[in-house]
Length: 268
Image (cartoon, rainbow, N blue to C red):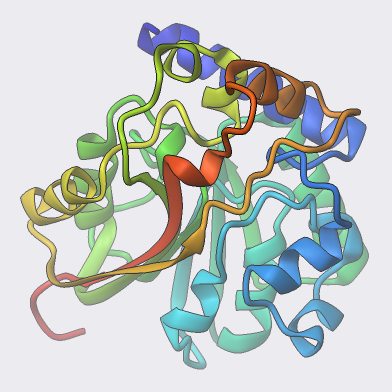
Protein backbone atom coordinates (compact mmCIF):
# COMPACT_ATOMS: atom_id res chain seq x y z
CA UNK A 1 0.00 0.00 0.00
CA UNK A 2 1.11 3.55 -0.68
CA UNK A 3 2.04 5.78 2.26
CA UNK A 4 -1.02 8.04 1.98
CA UNK A 5 -3.32 5.02 1.76
CA UNK A 6 -1.69 3.48 4.82
CA UNK A 7 -2.18 6.63 6.88
CA UNK A 8 -5.82 6.83 5.83
CA UNK A 9 -6.40 3.18 6.72
CA UNK A 10 -4.77 3.59 10.13
CA UNK A 11 -6.48 6.89 10.94
CA UNK A 12 -9.91 5.54 9.99
CA UNK A 13 -9.39 2.32 11.92
CA UNK A 14 -8.34 4.04 15.13
CA UNK A 15 -11.12 6.58 14.84
CA UNK A 16 -13.35 3.51 14.90
CA UNK A 17 -11.53 2.17 17.96
CA UNK A 18 -12.36 5.38 19.85
CA UNK A 19 -15.97 5.49 18.72
CA UNK A 20 -16.70 1.79 19.17
CA UNK A 21 -14.56 1.14 22.23
CA UNK A 22 -12.99 -1.98 20.68
CA UNK A 23 -9.28 -2.76 20.74
CA UNK A 24 -7.35 -3.07 17.47
CA UNK A 25 -6.44 -6.69 18.21
CA UNK A 26 -9.99 -7.84 18.62
CA UNK A 27 -9.25 -9.85 21.73
CA UNK A 28 -12.02 -11.69 23.55
CA UNK A 29 -10.97 -10.35 26.96
CA UNK A 30 -11.71 -6.97 28.52
CA UNK A 31 -9.38 -4.02 28.02
CA UNK A 32 -8.35 -4.27 31.66
CA UNK A 33 -7.52 -7.98 31.37
CA UNK A 34 -5.65 -7.31 28.14
CA UNK A 35 -3.56 -4.62 29.90
CA UNK A 36 -2.71 -7.07 32.68
CA UNK A 37 -1.57 -9.61 30.08
CA UNK A 38 0.75 -6.93 28.66
CA UNK A 39 2.45 -6.39 32.03
CA UNK A 40 0.44 -3.65 33.72
CA UNK A 41 -0.23 -4.13 37.41
CA UNK A 42 -3.51 -3.40 39.18
CA UNK A 43 -1.73 -0.58 41.01
CA UNK A 44 -0.75 1.00 37.68
CA UNK A 45 -4.22 0.56 36.22
CA UNK A 46 -5.70 2.24 39.30
CA UNK A 47 -4.09 5.61 38.44
CA UNK A 48 -5.15 5.57 34.76
CA UNK A 49 -8.63 6.73 33.69
CA UNK A 50 -10.55 3.66 32.57
CA UNK A 51 -11.63 5.48 29.40
CA UNK A 52 -7.96 5.78 28.37
CA UNK A 53 -7.53 2.00 28.18
CA UNK A 54 -8.70 0.99 24.71
CA UNK A 55 -7.02 -2.42 24.72
CA UNK A 56 -4.40 -1.49 22.13
CA UNK A 57 -1.21 -2.31 24.06
CA UNK A 58 1.35 -5.02 23.33
CA UNK A 59 3.59 -4.33 26.34
CA UNK A 60 4.30 -1.88 29.14
CA UNK A 61 7.01 0.55 27.98
CA UNK A 62 6.75 2.75 31.07
CA UNK A 63 7.86 -0.16 33.27
CA UNK A 64 11.08 -0.51 31.27
CA UNK A 65 11.74 3.23 31.07
CA UNK A 66 12.44 3.66 34.82
CA UNK A 67 10.98 7.17 34.74
CA UNK A 68 12.26 9.72 37.23
CA UNK A 69 10.87 12.85 38.83
CA UNK A 70 11.28 15.92 36.62
CA UNK A 71 11.86 14.13 33.30
CA UNK A 72 10.31 15.11 29.98
CA UNK A 73 8.61 12.11 28.37
CA UNK A 74 7.34 11.79 24.80
CA UNK A 75 4.80 9.11 23.85
CA UNK A 76 4.66 8.23 20.14
CA UNK A 77 1.12 7.35 19.09
CA UNK A 78 -0.37 8.26 22.46
CA UNK A 79 -3.94 7.24 21.67
CA UNK A 80 -6.40 8.06 24.44
CA UNK A 81 -3.52 8.82 26.82
CA UNK A 82 -3.07 5.46 28.57
CA UNK A 83 0.73 5.46 28.93
CA UNK A 84 0.92 9.26 29.20
CA UNK A 85 -1.17 9.23 32.35
CA UNK A 86 0.92 6.47 33.88
CA UNK A 87 4.10 8.43 33.05
CA UNK A 88 2.52 11.58 34.51
CA UNK A 89 2.38 10.11 38.00
CA UNK A 90 6.04 9.11 37.79
CA UNK A 91 7.63 12.32 36.54
CA UNK A 92 5.56 14.44 38.94
CA UNK A 93 4.77 18.13 38.89
CA UNK A 94 8.28 19.12 37.85
CA UNK A 95 8.16 16.76 34.88
CA UNK A 96 6.20 16.85 31.65
CA UNK A 97 4.58 14.31 29.35
CA UNK A 98 3.86 14.97 25.67
CA UNK A 99 1.63 12.68 23.65
CA UNK A 100 1.68 12.79 19.84
CA UNK A 101 -1.03 11.18 17.74
CA UNK A 102 -2.23 11.68 14.16
CA UNK A 103 -5.87 10.75 14.82
CA UNK A 104 -8.00 13.77 15.84
CA UNK A 105 -10.59 11.54 17.54
CA UNK A 106 -7.86 10.03 19.73
CA UNK A 107 -6.55 13.48 20.68
CA UNK A 108 -10.04 14.65 21.59
CA UNK A 109 -10.53 11.61 23.81
CA UNK A 110 -7.08 12.00 25.39
CA UNK A 111 -7.62 15.67 26.19
CA UNK A 112 -11.01 14.88 27.68
CA UNK A 113 -9.41 12.18 29.85
CA UNK A 114 -6.68 14.60 30.94
CA UNK A 115 -9.25 17.20 32.00
CA UNK A 116 -11.33 14.66 33.91
CA UNK A 117 -8.27 13.22 35.66
CA UNK A 118 -6.66 16.62 36.30
CA UNK A 119 -3.37 15.62 34.67
CA UNK A 120 -1.82 19.08 34.55
CA UNK A 121 1.63 17.95 33.40
CA UNK A 122 0.36 16.17 30.25
CA UNK A 123 -0.27 17.72 26.84
CA UNK A 124 -1.33 16.17 23.55
CA UNK A 125 -0.21 17.31 20.09
CA UNK A 126 -1.54 16.44 16.66
CA UNK A 127 1.24 15.07 14.50
CA UNK A 128 2.81 12.12 12.73
CA UNK A 129 5.59 10.11 14.30
CA UNK A 130 7.64 10.51 11.08
CA UNK A 131 7.44 14.30 11.56
CA UNK A 132 7.32 14.95 15.29
CA UNK A 133 6.04 18.38 16.45
CA UNK A 134 8.81 18.46 19.05
CA UNK A 135 12.01 20.53 19.29
CA UNK A 136 15.51 19.10 18.82
CA UNK A 137 17.27 17.71 21.92
CA UNK A 138 14.30 18.41 24.19
CA UNK A 139 13.13 15.02 25.52
CA UNK A 140 14.62 12.78 28.22
CA UNK A 141 12.64 9.62 27.48
CA UNK A 142 10.64 8.36 24.50
CA UNK A 143 8.05 5.63 24.94
CA UNK A 144 5.76 3.98 22.39
CA UNK A 145 3.29 1.12 22.62
CA UNK A 146 2.39 -0.97 19.56
CA UNK A 147 2.56 2.00 17.15
CA UNK A 148 5.81 2.07 15.15
CA UNK A 149 4.74 -1.08 13.29
CA UNK A 150 1.98 1.08 11.74
CA UNK A 151 4.45 3.47 10.09
CA UNK A 152 5.35 3.02 6.43
CA UNK A 153 8.76 4.67 7.06
CA UNK A 154 10.20 3.25 10.25
CA UNK A 155 13.68 4.57 9.54
CA UNK A 156 12.31 8.10 9.50
CA UNK A 157 10.58 7.43 12.83
CA UNK A 158 13.83 6.41 14.48
CA UNK A 159 15.69 9.32 12.91
CA UNK A 160 13.08 11.61 14.47
CA UNK A 161 13.48 9.84 17.81
CA UNK A 162 17.21 10.53 17.67
CA UNK A 163 16.62 14.19 16.74
CA UNK A 164 14.31 15.06 19.63
CA UNK A 165 16.14 13.11 22.34
CA UNK A 166 18.53 15.01 24.59
CA UNK A 167 22.10 13.68 24.69
CA UNK A 168 21.95 10.71 27.02
CA UNK A 169 18.21 10.36 26.49
CA UNK A 170 16.70 6.90 26.31
CA UNK A 171 14.04 4.95 24.45
CA UNK A 172 11.60 2.33 25.72
CA UNK A 173 9.33 0.79 23.09
CA UNK A 174 6.84 -2.06 23.05
CA UNK A 175 5.97 -3.24 19.56
CA UNK A 176 5.16 -6.10 17.19
CA UNK A 177 7.73 -7.71 14.90
CA UNK A 178 7.72 -10.71 12.58
CA UNK A 179 9.36 -14.09 13.03
CA UNK A 180 8.15 -15.47 9.66
CA UNK A 181 7.15 -14.04 6.29
CA UNK A 182 3.48 -13.16 6.10
CA UNK A 183 1.25 -14.93 3.57
CA UNK A 184 -0.01 -12.66 0.77
CA UNK A 185 -3.55 -12.45 2.15
CA UNK A 186 -2.28 -11.05 5.46
CA UNK A 187 0.30 -8.80 3.86
CA UNK A 188 -2.29 -7.17 1.60
CA UNK A 189 -5.06 -6.89 4.20
CA UNK A 190 -5.97 -3.36 5.31
CA UNK A 191 -7.41 -4.79 8.52
CA UNK A 192 -4.16 -6.65 9.21
CA UNK A 193 -2.26 -3.39 8.72
CA UNK A 194 -4.50 -1.58 11.18
CA UNK A 195 -4.20 -4.62 13.45
CA UNK A 196 -0.42 -4.14 13.75
CA UNK A 197 0.56 -7.14 11.63
CA UNK A 198 0.87 -6.29 7.92
CA UNK A 199 3.15 -3.32 8.60
CA UNK A 200 5.46 -5.19 10.96
CA UNK A 201 9.00 -6.14 9.91
CA UNK A 202 11.38 -8.94 10.85
CA UNK A 203 13.18 -8.51 14.17
CA UNK A 204 16.62 -8.02 12.60
CA UNK A 205 15.30 -5.34 10.25
CA UNK A 206 13.70 -3.57 13.20
CA UNK A 207 17.02 -3.57 15.03
CA UNK A 208 18.76 -2.20 11.94
CA UNK A 209 16.42 0.80 11.85
CA UNK A 210 17.39 1.59 15.45
CA UNK A 211 21.12 1.22 14.76
CA UNK A 212 21.07 3.36 11.62
CA UNK A 213 19.37 6.23 13.45
CA UNK A 214 22.50 6.63 15.59
CA UNK A 215 21.08 5.22 18.81
CA UNK A 216 23.27 2.87 20.82
CA UNK A 217 23.13 0.48 23.79
CA UNK A 218 20.36 -1.33 21.92
CA UNK A 219 18.53 -4.16 23.62
CA UNK A 220 15.78 -6.09 21.81
CA UNK A 221 13.86 -8.59 23.92
CA UNK A 222 11.08 -10.91 22.75
CA UNK A 223 8.32 -10.65 25.33
CA UNK A 224 5.90 -13.27 24.04
CA UNK A 225 3.14 -13.81 21.48
CA UNK A 226 1.73 -10.91 19.50
CA UNK A 227 -1.30 -10.75 21.84
CA UNK A 228 -3.57 -10.24 18.84
CA UNK A 229 -5.87 -13.22 18.45
CA UNK A 230 -8.36 -11.73 15.99
CA UNK A 231 -11.08 -13.41 17.99
CA UNK A 232 -13.63 -10.66 18.63
CA UNK A 233 -16.45 -11.20 16.17
CA UNK A 234 -17.78 -7.70 16.84
CA UNK A 235 -14.59 -5.90 15.80
CA UNK A 236 -14.22 -5.18 12.06
CA UNK A 237 -10.41 -5.16 12.30
CA UNK A 238 -10.43 -8.57 13.95
CA UNK A 239 -12.90 -9.89 11.40
CA UNK A 240 -10.61 -8.87 8.54
CA UNK A 241 -7.53 -10.38 10.17
CA UNK A 242 -9.31 -13.65 10.85
CA UNK A 243 -10.54 -13.78 7.26
CA UNK A 244 -6.97 -13.42 5.96
CA UNK A 245 -5.76 -16.38 8.01
CA UNK A 246 -6.07 -19.98 6.84
CA UNK A 247 -8.04 -22.43 9.02
CA UNK A 248 -5.94 -23.44 12.00
CA UNK A 249 -3.48 -20.56 11.57
CA UNK A 250 -2.73 -18.08 14.33
CA UNK A 251 -1.13 -14.65 14.15
CA UNK A 252 1.36 -16.02 16.65
CA UNK A 253 2.76 -18.19 13.85
CA UNK A 254 4.09 -14.99 12.31
CA UNK A 255 4.49 -12.27 14.93
CA UNK A 256 5.72 -11.62 18.47
CA UNK A 257 5.60 -8.73 20.89
CA UNK A 258 8.98 -7.30 21.80
CA UNK A 259 10.59 -4.51 23.75
CA UNK A 260 13.28 -2.23 22.36
CA UNK A 261 15.53 -0.16 24.61
CA UNK A 262 18.22 2.21 23.35
CA UNK A 263 20.08 5.38 24.26
CA UNK A 264 21.46 8.49 22.58
CA UNK A 265 25.13 9.08 23.33
CA UNK A 266 26.08 11.89 25.68
CA UNK A 267 25.20 13.19 29.13
CA UNK A 268 21.93 14.84 30.01
